[in-house]
Image 1 (spheres, chains in turn green, purple):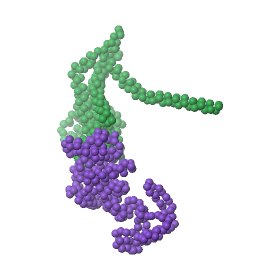
Image 2 (tube, chains in turn yellow, blue; image 1 turned 180 degrees about the vertical axis):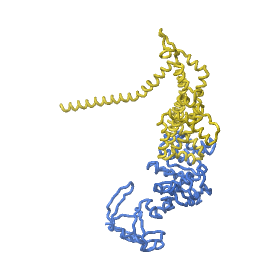
Image 3 (tube, rainbow over the protein chains, first blue to last red; image 1 turned 180 degrees about the horizontal axis):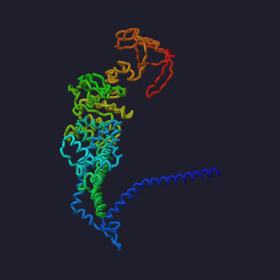
Length: 314
Length: 326
């Protein structure tokens, strides 16, 4: 009897232990799920809320340099004057538009340049492919700032390119390239090209080459086969690459500052100047909020597209 | 038409590697012709040259009297069914099948009509709007077949059409394929490594090895009268005995084999000289096993002891030890 009872007891013990383990597992699962949300809350949502709050205040010369949200009587003191100022002052509208156009141009150039490169890498044999991918990633090992400085050395009136052209005799006077939109574009394109190539490569690498041959076999020329097969299958990579280039290029500060010169109007620079030069935190916050709204558009569009694709797939 | 497809002196080299070495071949209209061989024998390269994906290093290919040697794949009156099926993953079944016609610029109504007819032929009517990833292997195979057939090519090339299917489905599909070929009368050129498949499917076969043709003939010819040792070994199973020719005339050749301990007699056209060292081969199904010595006229009897028994799916493999081997 005693033995039976103890066996039962130990079984019950085992059960308790099992439940404990399960509970433990459940806790870990919850933590794992919660972690990204927590991350987003602490490092994105909360700062965003703070910035939004500041954008609704008035600038004052104090520490911190904006009016509190509630006055002494406890009444809400918000103002939309920053936004109305941004919307009425032409300079900001032009700056936003220029930034969007520059970012779009950068994205397009990166796509035009990156697609053949990604295609070439995806179609090369595996040993060459490893080397080529390495070459794409290698620049990241050098500081971003150094790489942009290097472009200054290349584009200067007294830089490598001008000196070379003068030496060959193609030009008599150095071409002014530094502190132009051209220099900014080159810098942007150079810096963001890898972000276009890598997602493109990922989607092209998965594609079966037989598909192209099948299209050709069925009467499509090389060009037609490209638009019928390669392009639609690469589209997820194209969209990912374009977003990865467009979004950071839009808010870029360092490249227009170093290569575009003091006159170049770029929203990232305006943001910096308002924060640190003019010390107008509320206006700077409003600039940042509008920038965010502008960037949310393409992301929403992308999500719509993905949702539609999934629907079509099921 | 005996020479609907005329292949003359075709070679293809990749660097130092000779994939196909100066082969000649005629394939008749409406034939179901198989190119049979192990991996790396050059059979796929030959097929790809017919499709236009590889340009021959030397030689010429004519289809229906037109030289297509340097014609682009999209200009040839030839369609191909790929081993991977190569179904466009972003198009549904109907779009896949109609692709060739859309590229030809056929009117929409006509495309719809012909796609429906094709769906009927390959029994996929209910799957018209399905995406490829919602199809089974057998259904994908039929989409690929329908897509390749819809342009009514003069020649349909099939690269290992059944290799991706499981055994049961393969047998079923094999007969379906033969029926469709029979119905449409299109010339089929099939590449396969599966000798059983080639034997049942084809009207004629070419056996390839190392880029060269070993034998061209009907399945029966290749089975009964293999041209050389490679073909004899490659097709089916076979028992070979070494021996010396003791007598030969126009119809039969007698070979005395030390291994068998008997004189073996082969019927056939091959003429050998007396005293020549030869190999004589016997298909297993031509051997009868009995406890009693046969007294029938013309039977050749070898005595042996059963020393091994393997049960295969439908047959039994019996190993014999001949006294001479002891």
